[in-house]
Amino acid sequence: MKRVFSGVQPTGNIHIGNYLGALKQFVELQDENECIYCIVDLHSITVPQDPKELRKHILDVAALYMAVGVDPKKSIIFVQSDVSGHAELSWILTCNSYTGELSRMTQFKDKSKGRESAPTGLFTYPILMAADILLYDTDIVPVGNDQKQHIELCRDIAIRINNTVKKDTFVVPDGRFLKAGARIMALDDPMSKMSKSAENVHSRISLLDEDNKIKKSIMRATTDSDGEIKFDFENKPGVSNLLNIYSAFSGKSIEDIVAAFSGCGYGDFKKELVGIVQEALTPIKKNFDEIRQSQELLDTLRSGAERAGAIAEKTMKRVKGNFGLGF
Ligand code: ATP
Ligand code: LTN
Image (cartoon, rainbow, N blue to C red):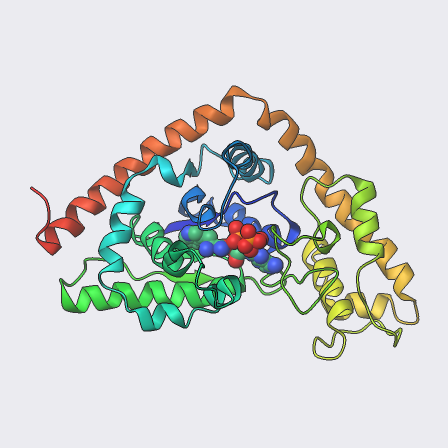
């Protein structure tokens, strides 16, 4: 059985990009593997958060994991800051990483924008992510395409320590990326990725959006003036993104969808897409409402932290021992 680990930041409500890129995989993987899914709250404080909002978002994300089908009987669900090993291992990895490799991370460059006042946590963010993964001897990390560079860095650090400190200190993980949903773009700007923290709410569809909001966001999504429905990301990024979303939710291939809409206008295509997305999100919203209010949610997070903590403790003992740390 392989070990799977992944996480989502509690920076807002999960959108269809997070779902199609990552969460769909969480559910697929849980029958055949030992899965650990984390709400990475320590990552979210790399930018300022309101404590009350943060608490709410942590519980929302946990409930959304379960609402899309992550089953706490099969998978461990827990909150990162409940297991101290993440921060502890992060320091050990920090001492074995290079400022040069961190400076090359595109997410850091995008989010810091070269500011002197960029939080140091934004710079060291990928090290904490590597600690999350390595702490559980993870084999597989299901994520969206935007995390490829971070996974590569995690592998580099693990291999470096295995080579310089002690062989087999860490399991070297592999990323797992889906074809159809790996990179869903913003609806208002198909050149940037859909994101929880973008200002325009119509740039994304949250899993909890009402039917009306879903309709508005899709109907006003940026397309182009040539009027033909075909997949060509370079010249028609808006339409191609909508085709991707259609394909990921319906399970139909892009070719089949393009053939079915041949000769139709963008309006007809968008209307169909609205229906497909609304239908997919309706049961998720219903599940969420039930789970979010239940005692089961807190019980799941408490027992998840205990189970994750036990695995983490074993790894930390081994890693510290290999470094000559601790008694
Ligand atoms: P933020 O806007 O706060 O940076 P985010 O929307 O990028 O957040 P994360 O919590 O950083 O979301 O990502 C959670 C998971 O969703 C990761 O596996 C990430 O790769 C995936 N993901 C995020 N955005 C997209 C996207 N637009 N398309 C596909 N997968 C995505
Ligand atoms: N950086 C990731 C979230 C994340 C993560 C992880 C994903 C933090 N730790 C460990 C997989 C494994 C992101 O999506 N922005």
